[in-house]
Length: 84
Image (tube, one colour):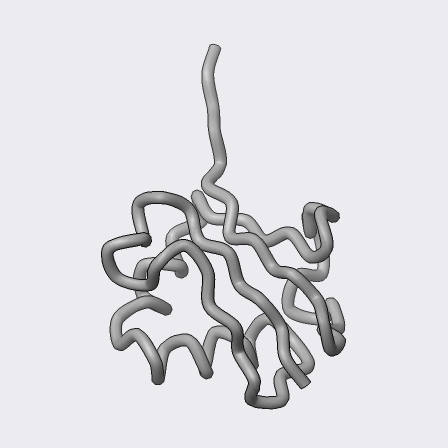
């Protein structure tokens, strides 16, 4: 199993533009655990509510932790943009 994680530019110095995770992950929390091992401190950064997750170009607005991940999925970490 492999999923691709794409990071926003503010993380590129720490993670690069994207990472392929080949450990079996079935959920966003499981993915975050793997990413934390690879990039210590990343989960604390991503705990900020300004970050959202999209899977295969579908923004996860509800049930993020329960959304299943599958082989070949592309997960994007998307910062919230607000304005007025």
